[in-house]
Image (cartoon, rainbow over all chains, first blue to last red; front, side, top):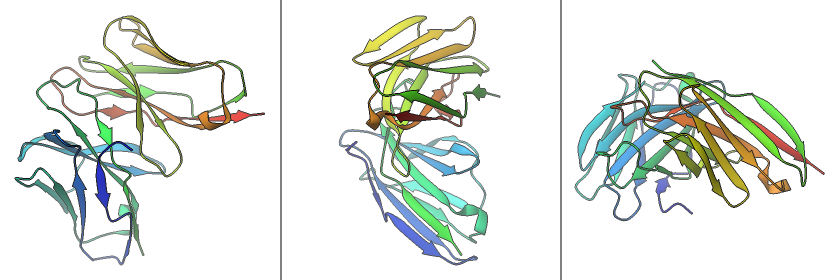
Length: 115
Length: 110
């Protein structure tokens, strides 16, 4: 158990809908990262937050957005869902983002299925 | 940009030693990580290399050659539970994001 929690574990929804994935980092970690993992693409970095502020952006679609709250939990919002958005979504956390070599610890993931 | 290559699949026998290679091309380099991921589960941290050489941690060792853009993960005394995907990931200079390879699926057979 990494100490990172994610809810829900599974999510099934329809095309065009909007969902919110939630992540709580390890105690003491200030930085949260979101990744998408699909069968053919591997783990893809989406976005990073540090202490409430966006720090880095990867291959995140405009239909997706995220935020980190004062209590450091984070939410990833996915809207206008398409079949291709079906994937495992992982959250990871690390102590600080200033040292880019901080080890990231991953949560159990949310499996999103878009029908 | 960054490009990371690993073999797609490998098979090894219980009790044996296996080496999983990773080559990378990055715009700057600030460290290489290895993660283990069982199917449908979270990646778990195995090792981190930033300087050339071998890092040993129990049955697992990781090697890095920055001049060659090359790393390997060495697993000794293989156990059935080591059947998993092994992900190589790199952080480029001035970057906060991990770029992952597609992973090597290791099957350990009796």
